[in-house]
Image (cartoon, rainbow, N blue to C red; front, side, top):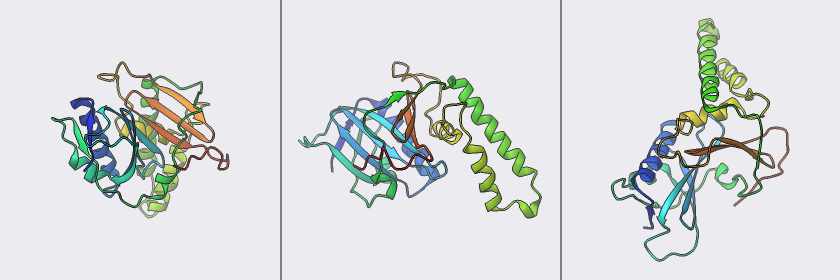
Length: 228
């Protein structure tokens, strides 16, 4: 089994936490791994949010078995989580699985440019809290006969599809960032790149010190797709 040597115990703990959150939303979750040099990118798609989550993990060295080619494989998130040894700061790469459709369409590697208008982290967290409160209030006000799955989904789509200010970023992307542990006060990762919003082709990416959320912008066709 290929063994990844992570930079430190903290990287291993953060990877494990990210995988555990993905599994919380989908017990059969898969993740796509791409490693080049000393950086591992872990891609996942929590079904409740319709976004792509990316966790970058620093590696102490690429591999321990002499492989010099870049790693690119889709695996079970649960099996990868079981292989993480936080005390040793290692993770074993499980056997490949047949990837879900999203795993074949990833955001582009480059061409990202800053987008203006992103509120401060506290304001983003307040936006999510207000959306959650509105969803609960509106669904609780529904008569029992109207509290159907279809009505709950319709209300959720209306609220979570709203954009953050004039950025074009849907509120569901911010909600995903918070739910996956990406939108939190800077601590151990305080030296990482700050919160920012970027675009490349049809994609928007909310970047935080702990990970990124990427989402396709509606109504822009299929330009900007990167199939890898």
